[in-house]
Length: 529
Image 1: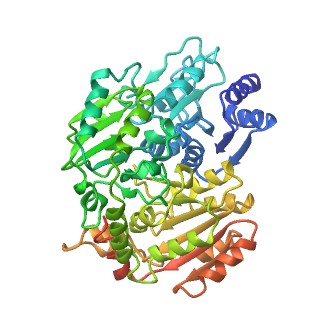
Image 2 (image 1 turned 180 degrees about the horizontal axis):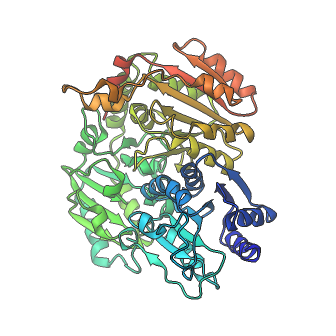
Image 3 (image 1 turned 135 degrees about the vertical axis):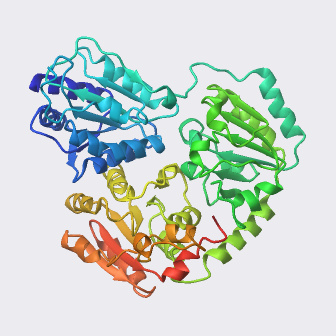
């Protein structure tokens, strides 16, 4: 087993694996971790396998396979599942590795035996057993980074496979093998821009992987993004128009900005990156590098599926730049949004604004899901995709704490602000011990209204179970303090600035529990999303 582990460790390092998380057994997974550490790859033992996969996913959010989670067969693999599912939603190509029985193992070896591929086939991009020539690992690595990037898994046994076949999920492999944008299509775009007076742009997360060289804030027209593409335009730009989510309220940018546009050109606008796709009043052109079913629901007038759109981007944007507009509209819009956000001093909007003003401009915001998430996505001004990380597509409760730890370990020079709510704080709270052990520069903000605020808000005007939406004794700061992390509870603004100054002098994590009035908290997103 040691020889196999050494060979695999060499291959993993060669393929770019720099960070490893997980829980090992006493078999080949332990030998593999030992071999990786001998080669300079740090292993971080998580408290739960799902958290390990989320940490690995955070390291891979740029679309590259740079991290892995390692575990045992059966129950260990089953515990991987929530993390793999989250990475699938967020297009994070993390590798998971499990101990497993070889194909030659007799069926009566039944201890912890389960079909790993059957368990994850709906949301993994590719699966393989480890073969003698490591072809499976090489093919999986290439598959993981193709659009749409996604998680991959490999099973390792004490005996290598003679011949293997890569199980590829066709539903998760939507990238185009070869598709050019034709002259006729580019001419259609040019003519659409020519006849437009008010063109606008929407960016999906594909832009962060393929068009990150573009200065979107300098084009001179409103530029909006999906939540997964937050930061693709510097959000301090005068032409940033907010997030397209499909949850349209009075002050949603779809309602306040895009209704004024007569042409929308969207790069990578996918139905997987909005709560629900919706149509627009303007003419819509979507340019993407995946199969067009990912663009269904927006009722686009033209969908161009091409993996060579980079060749045309300068031409398209130069034509759009000749139609500047929207700066007055955007100033008015953001004034109205600010009036809505900052009506009360002691709510998440003002707190997040104050914290961002205090922290370094290179701070990364990590958001869990909840009402505070909708606020945070609006208030936090990300300079680039690096400066924001959320469960933007999956809205997967509980991911923020392990995600923040994974980010901190792979971005050691940057401060992390991790915001979590009543529901999300509980699943992986124990992982904060890793932040303490490694003295990670994470400020954990726990925003509590004493229950599931987003669920209560959605259930307005109907009779609901109070037991289902209220949390008895929702305080956690004493528990976190017992883990060795400096912790404090706040119920009013006084004291927040002092605590932030204390953190500036600290070497390691800090946890702030903030208590809100449930009624004010429940109504804060009413006109926004």
